[in-house]
Image 1 (tube, rainbow, N blue to C red):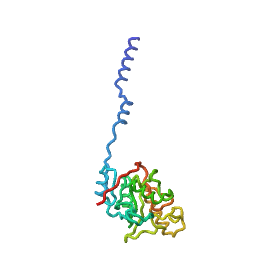
Image 2 (cartoon, rainbow, N blue to C red):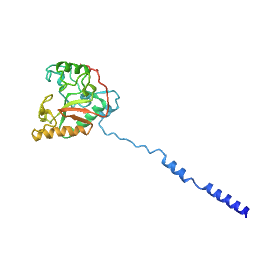
Image 3 (cartoon, rainbow, N blue to C red):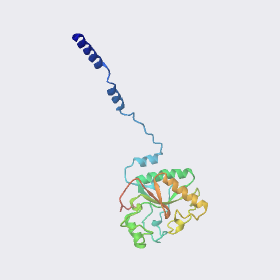
Image 4 (tube, helix red, strand yellow):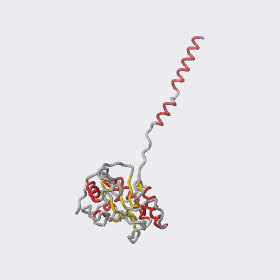
Length: 233
């Protein structure tokens, strides 16, 4: 009997040894690398070239000629009444520029275009503004630095197909309650225009500030204050 019992144990051990290791097989299947997904970029060529460029800055007008530039600090038509920039350009950090390019495409589909009043503002220009108007209610102190100085802020509005600005309730750089987002004593058209601008920009990562309907900050990336000044031709 002992011999028979011993033979049975050997047979059972051999049968177990030949069984497949289901746990090992399951782990092997789960750990297989996923099938790579092909990403298709359907943006137009000019946008793709811009995305592939790894430099830190973007010139908005070179990316999309449909942007309208009215860079006020390159003229005397601003709240300090003096020219601050040698010439007018709209530069932004690449992430902010890409987002603004996307939102401009949306606005153009609605029959509007973006007019830009100010974009990146070199830090020395911030000092010039402060020297003219040393009031933190209107100008960010240069030692603090604004998002304009980081290339992450824009001042803008919308124009229609004829190039006329949409009614926004006040002019650009008007420092009064009429420029505030929470001031609702405006015609319905003005409120609708502001809401269109605000909500569409919010979709791509721009946020407003309470006191200026034209000013938008891009969040999601961080850059330091910059002294870089663009070349004029």
